[in-house]
Image 1 (cartoon, rainbow, N blue to C red):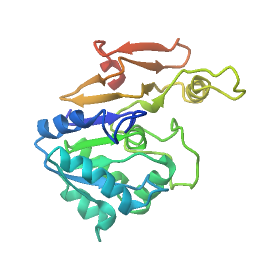
Image 2: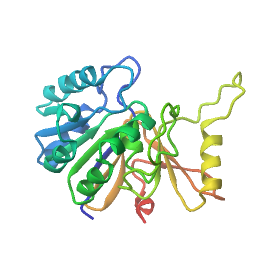
Image 3: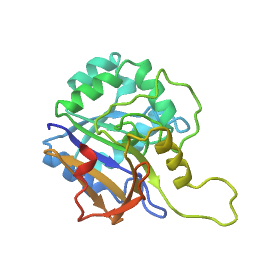
Image 4: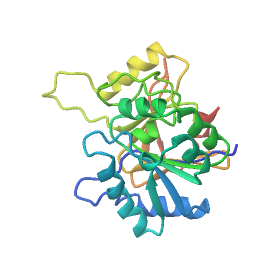
Length: 239
């Protein structure tokens, strides 16, 4: 399997700099992949705007020796993807991200390039869209995309920012409730709940959990959710 992926749960931990916790991880991923130039996809950044989003990410990437430019500055998005040596998809609203990926005609193009070995990284929404669909996003459906189908770079669903925290004063559903709804309707699917300060790395056909947080939670219909640590074999999710 040629795919070379870094799928990060979150960009920022409370009280830390933007992309602070995962900078070394991003640098190492790019160094291992022989990458110097990164094409950034800012489409999930609804509130901050694409120019500001590019500036924010670029300052971090330049600090670790990487060049970055945003696809929204390109006249031909498809050609930009075809020429990219690495793509980074930023977090924000997943529905808006997917809408724009389809509108610009690059959902399939990115998927094809990444399946053929182009380095792909994403955080939050950018990790979410690496799975088969956006159906396990945490985001508000602020816009209707052409399809819920995403890149299918991994065969399981991803739930970024996963938490099993329960506030006894809150009367709504928990994250586990929502994910259990998903697997009841989609019993053939695995769901990986990746916690803050956690990432999934796919390299040379092997999937691993990495980061500061040492556990993720996996859901499957009619099975008890199970926790997996950094040292555990999670490659069953790729079957």
